[in-house]
Length: 428
Image 1 (cartoon, rainbow, N blue to C red):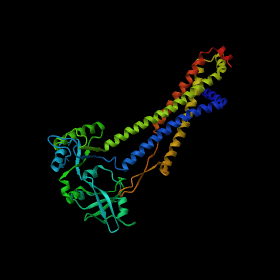
Image 2: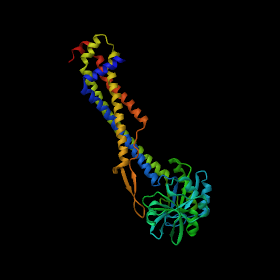
Image 3: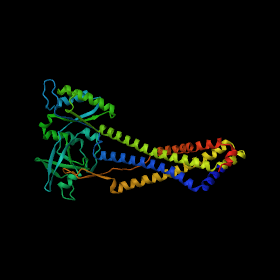
Image 4: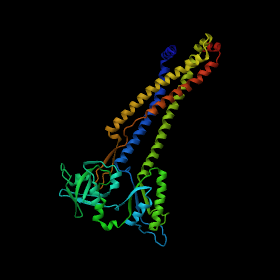
């Protein structure tokens, strides 16, 4: 084995240009593959991180009832179906096996909050024990709602960071401060990150909203569901059954395309997964295409190598070298070049991916500005975040390179074995 390595090294030294070109072809292919896959992972991580920060991946499903588009059972189109508290309880019982629970939600509304310093209009959100159980909320100051506040309807509020800057002078501690909206006072208990970059959001307990605006909660058009299933097929089956039950309960056509709208965090996740699976496939095709081009180059160079060493091969045959010795000599050089060049390519590719990750975190090219209207501050998100390449993928790519090296060397090696020693020695 030692002699084989020495022989391979001597052959590489003899043809330095050829060795360099072969190594560069292989290393370049693996660098392209590693960098493309690393960037793909970084884009996926960036989009996931952005969706979490924007609240799109929070657990839950929103159901919105709108005007009917089709007449049904004697009712004219344009009717607005609404749910009473008793009907919501029936839905809870009917779908107890599918849902952790159902929360009624107020219709999309805004409130203008004021202090002695200033005022700001924000979107109103409501919190319940279920929403507190399942969502992820980034409280940067103070705290979130206590169980007692959620149960008794105290006039407390969670404000966004962007809202605080418009209601209080810089440096003012907002916790415990009082704000008013429509003549009603609320005590601030916490400050959160801006979940929605398009609208500032102020949250109060749902029980507080029900106590302040009882007429608006007698019949509701919005529900927040907390499904137990998460797979796309499970959600599709549940959506069909839930819409069917609503259509029977509220007397609207189940085929009405407009009256029932369901917005699911699972749908967002599944859509993102499909998009990024397609991106991964495209990047794999591009990367493997680069490796394929490299393998063609390696095969061509190995053919030239065998051609140049044909006289040497003929002499070895005449001196009694066995076919497997000739095959081992040629394939050994091809495999050695593939492994060494592949490792160099993997290291360089990983280094480039690390540099891209560092640049994405510190430079402006990978930062996207989102929102900034209606009282909310503009949010900035990294479109590439923590790019990396899985170790198993790197090992798999190296194995592919070894296979490429064997395939690249085996055809010219077999050709050399078929040439008689006398003819090989005459070859120039």
